[in-house]
Length: 340
Image (tube, rainbow, N blue to C red):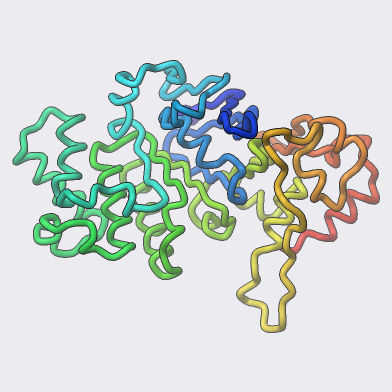
């Protein structure tokens, strides 16, 4: 049986704004096993990045806070750790690749020094050894002529190369968990593929567990072991990646899959957009958060949050259509609408 490297239990995160309390994460429960790649998928604003930042306690203290819940990393509950305790974990045991490498990397410092800085903070080695390790990491992530390029500044690198530098920094201390927060968002399609292949190879070789955050189901199809679909601050479905594509159960998951274009289709395609807008998380819906946009919505969906239904030991969803008393005609209609 695989050991759990991370377990999140009933996590609630809020932000205080002039308009009121934004309930960004509402009862998230997740777990990541050793050597596993878990993808968290959902549209912008659903709470993916807030969940990731909560793991490392990077929520801005001025406005945000973890209201309740547990974050258990490697057997230790870390949600109540002090900033000093978290600094010992960040970079060494849990690392993060941020969305925009240009804002995450110091533009005034040479690349080699930025990698060395992380290594020297968490490992008891001298400058010469740290430099050697920094160049080695640049070579591992596929930066050619690493010695010469290490002496350059971030602005002298392309977007794809800057992302490789971020990956080198994140993996320099061989963390147990890597959080990749939309690592390919600002890159073109060819570079996206290269970065995802690189992460896949590094995960295989180093055995690092990965949480991959994205809004694109297609990005994770060949990389993740499991995927959790998030909507309005909640996990609405979680399954093994093949199971999720072949047997989706939540209407939101089905809508996401149906919005992916079929590249093998030779005739004209009409894409299926998800009509409507995400709910206001200052006053979230009383029932299922997706019910205002769901064409299979029932009265109970608008009144009560759906309970968790286990499809099998690795697949669950929160949807009233999975309840034993749900109308069969609606279930059959939803099944017909799945475009696999």
